[in-house]
Image 1 (spheres, rainbow, N blue to C red):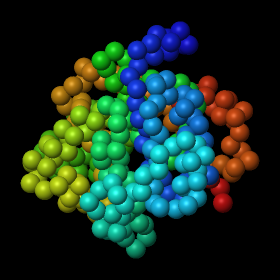
Image 2: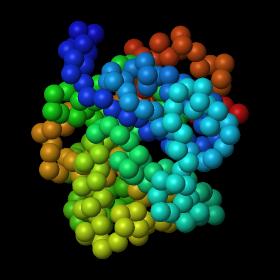
Image 3: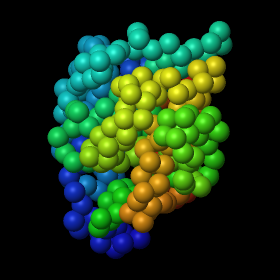
Image 4: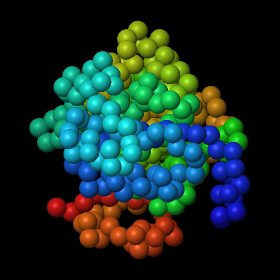
Length: 263
């Protein structure tokens, strides 16, 4: 296994890392950053934290050597311009973070940038480029509404049978730009407006940046993609339960864990 990883990482390109976050992520965010540095087997340019202007987040970025970006400066719209909620749920921030990720091509200097959720911790080595192919970590289930939105947005059905929703992904700046230009050309509006207009906002899970980008690439470049099982485990843990020994034990079965902390 380790010999294979060494072979894969011999010529890996430099990447940036983008992590959207909010204050409630401060418990897990340091673990996420440390794990990226330990397990992402690429030279890392910058780790960029896109978040609200909160002193605690800014302080964490300084301690961890990350670049802080005020989320209100990333798009021509802010969270206040997005209304995606019902009487029982509010997904406004969730959608906003997806749009922030898709505008990462304007923030990152490297040709590739990895996005990862602020509650997802890598527990095994990861390589995202093998030669001229990109590695995507996949699962075998998704939300049907993601693909209804994709069809309205792109004018075609999904092309991949697996799901690209796995909490982290490597994006290529040129391909992200191409995706957004394709959307704007089709809808004669900004890409983010087209996304919001294509969604059925009465549905709690109506858009996925990962499904959209993954299927956009798969429709034209499936031969340039390596699909691997995500092996992600969702856990409900308290601070005292998030130990290195626990994560090492889980690494025998999983590649990453998504931590939902007990109150």
